[in-house]
Length: 506
Image (tube, rainbow, N blue to C red; front, side, top):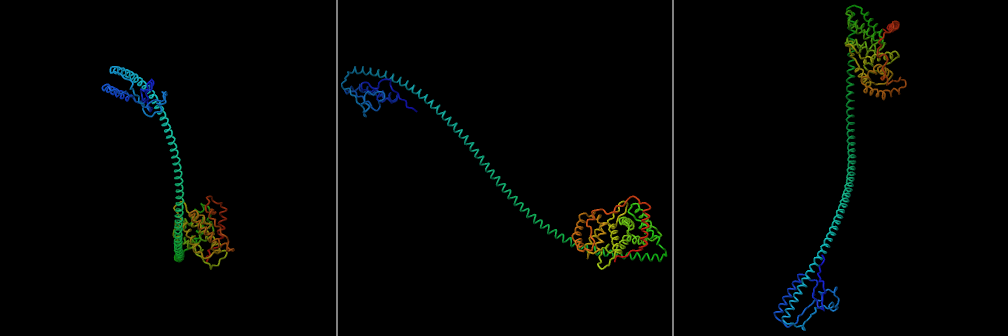
């Protein structure tokens, strides 16, 4: 804040005397000094002292800027002492002069006080204006500073927010990369663990499969051995029943002293007239069943004649097998006799192998026709009516398994037997067992046919014949002409007279 200086509007000194030795003093001090001066005057009046009036003026309190008349007053460091010894006044004059001086001083003091107040007011007004201006300037400056601070704060806040955002983004990117790397590592470890587990599981499954395969092979071998034993036992049992039946028929013929050859010829004629036509087959079935039911001929004689002549038949094997299946479903006891005749005609229907047998062309033809008929029998499916093939496809599957497991040597006889059987039964076995039959044929291709190729004198075997339905498996529905039927009958009769019986294959 600025200092207020009050100065009177008159000269500071008159003839070397200063009336205001301290121009910078305050109004209160002036009043105080005035009162002190009045007290001193009163004291002088009371004492009537002859001593001169001494006025001391301080050189330091004088204003050197406005009054530069005396250089001595500016250079002196001590107060000037002004003595009025030559001036003498009487008491009345002194009183009058004193009153006059007091009045003059009062007026001067009043004027000076008034001017001082006005100066003070002016100075105060100026100071107030300057203060207000300073305040406004300060406020404006403070406002600018505050605004600048706010702007800086906002900028710093934005910079800080941007920095934090960048830090957060960098941290998020880093954490994402770390997490991604961790996930990748986890996935790799998981894949490794799964791979190891899968490998271990595969090894366990492989071991289990091998153990199961070994167990199954062992079980299959045991089953096959048991089945083979059962098959051999059944063969013996069937042959024994056939011998007993033949003995019983011989006894009946001797005891009854009758000739039953007409019934036998009737059965043989019906078998020779078998064709691949459905109506003809149905007719022959009725004729044979009629002979079986004829009370004039014992059933055992009819069964023996039917079995002997059916096994030696060279007609359509599928039509013959259909008649066999239907007749044996009505007379089940005829099946064992028929199978015994099959076993007598060809040992491969058991199956059984004999490497010491000597074969000729006629024996191979009988082997081929017998195995064709047996293969057609096991695959026959009698549809319609109440008839069922009691020696169906499951017996053909068991025969195929026994054949490969009991084979001791690969020769013309084994190849002929297998080829004839598959030509008639292969399609039906594939339709029934599908992939299992294909696996069996793969074994045939890998092992059986490999050995066949080594034997150059042995004919080849078609291992894919089962994919095509053999000719004659589906019977025709239309009748043949009478002339063609008569020709067939004549051919059958000639064959019958040439072969009254069949020759065993062993």
